[in-house]
Length: 255
Ligand SMILES: NC(=O)c1ccc[n+]([C@@H]2O[C@H](COP(=O)([O-])OP(=O)(O)OC[C@H]3O[C@@H](n4cnc5c(N)ncnc54)[C@H](O)[C@@H]3O)[C@@H](O)[C@H]2O)c1
Image (cartoon, rainbow, N blue to C red):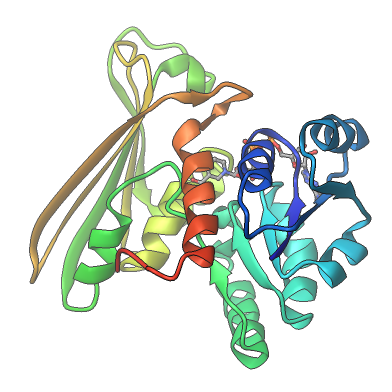
């Protein structure tokens, strides 16, 4: 398989290095608007080649995006229209219902897939299964040390309480998980989000609480930061690599 990577930052680099070791991946095309990021990564990844984005789309079988919401708006339609599968990390971009429907329609017509890795959260598998039947309530509680939110508090403070649609707009860099959870479950308008600044917290954590006809679900993860970008959780990179393995693997685990 030939893999294209758009965005050679923290997550793109982790995925490129992992893909370099995968037997089934023969070539890795790299593109970033920061030319130094491309060349740094190229030096570390044997199978890689730096190309312009149009060439990347033409030559890749699967395109992995770890760049920005703008990048998805810029390239997703082109990638899918070319019949290529797309893995999206900047899932907040899919809050735009018209845009999401448009790329879904193109993917269906072109018989290709859009993969959304679980990212920095766990429990998405349970939410997917539970949402087949009535799912009454889904809440995401994201807790961060105040400095990770650019704030200063001396006690635990809920700084946002609302639905996922508002949360994604107000915290676009931090809240891809809310977007992913909404798409997996009951949508952006019904999924509840709380963002908590907690001076006692040393790590970013995400807790999913849900109940419905299936019973109750409670899933919590405490994330280590990515060593190359403390704003991203390391689990996000690992989930991207796991998604890539899933695409290559004949055994498909999970809902
Ligand atoms: N789904 C999740 O759970 C999850 C978790 C963490 C991060 N993310 C998202 O994944 C993306 C990447 O995160 P990261 O930590 O690797 O960020 P990063 O800042 O380390 O790297 C992003 C790279 O993309 C490049 N870039 C930005 N816009 C581009 C464009 N239009 N075309 C080409 N390159 C472009 C930047 O120059 C940078 O090198 C971000 O959008 C982030 O919000 C998602």
